[in-house]
Length: 212
Image 1 (cartoon, one colour):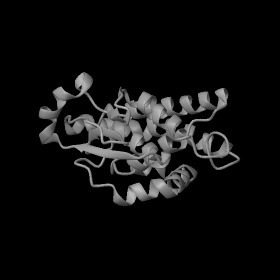
Image 2 (cartoon, helix red, strand yellow; image 1 turned 45 degrees about the horizontal axis):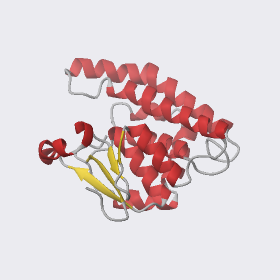
Image 3 (tube, one colour; image 1 turned 180 degrees about the vertical axis):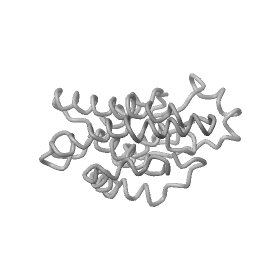
Image 4 (cartoon, helix red, strand yellow; image 1 turned 90 degrees about the vertical axis):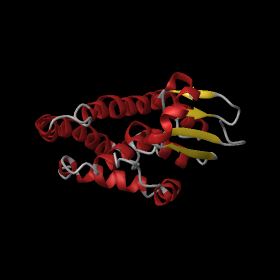
């Protein structure tokens, strides 16, 4: 299931919980293949994937890796995107957990197909409570930075993860305006998105079945 000499990354043709790994793979400079799974092929492919779930990564050596944050951290280490200092590495872990567990889970509570009334209530909760809470946290991280990066003086997987989720949430019309009160957060995410290898990936990224 792996391409010789490459990391093969399996995830649906959407962003959601798997897109930040694509950003990290792109920034890492590691050779990789973006194996996007279309919904119509999933039932056939599913039994061939350990755990019957994605994200899923096959390394050039044939190792089969699961769990999104664990995959992301592994790739980031291989690509030099995790600090060697233990405290700095912890700070990256804490940032990623805040964004990909706490913040992301607050979003997906109202993203599944529900009644219009339930979705409207979910959007309102995000715009009035959850959005300001999490964007406020990110805004503080950005303002405290002296280097332009969230941890240390060069890009880490924490920067990529934060920028990816901010970039993705801009696509949800009902909540994208909640970012407007945090121009520093938007500027930070845009700057990371425009960094060389990430920008190259975004220019060629196919349109997903769902934008988020």
